[in-house]
Length: 149
Ligand code: ZN
Image (cartoon, rainbow, N blue to C red; front, side, top):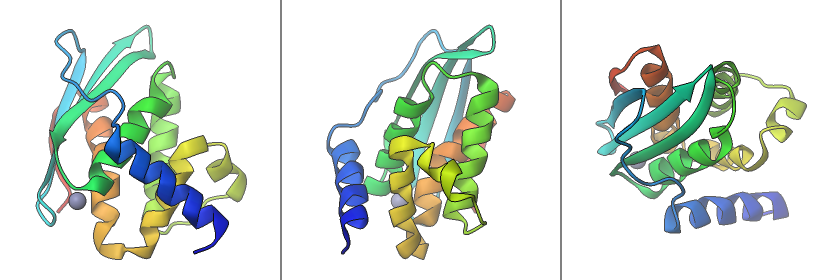
């Protein structure tokens, strides 16, 4: 394992051990459920949008380490950003994980989220990592249930 992979691994393990924003939100404006039947991950994403800005974002659910870490990284990264910026970052992360080409500077600009690149080595787990991002997109569209299949 090289230094970068080691760093990515540590970030993912840390978010699994101490998930950020892991709670339900009563006063949310947007909400969606996500399921990944392949792994059994179930996640709920809560967002509070005001004037086009994500004032608060949280998640709750049961899932594997990768689904939980990915959701935790997502909430930590997007709190305080605009909805437009969140859509852009969702697109970059999903493209990164599903193997579409991204410019390296786009990934570097993502900060800790770039750690999710490590998941690409485990193709069976990619849907675990994209689940929270798809669920967030769904919640911003107005809510509902997302299945990764
Ligand atoms: Zn999973």
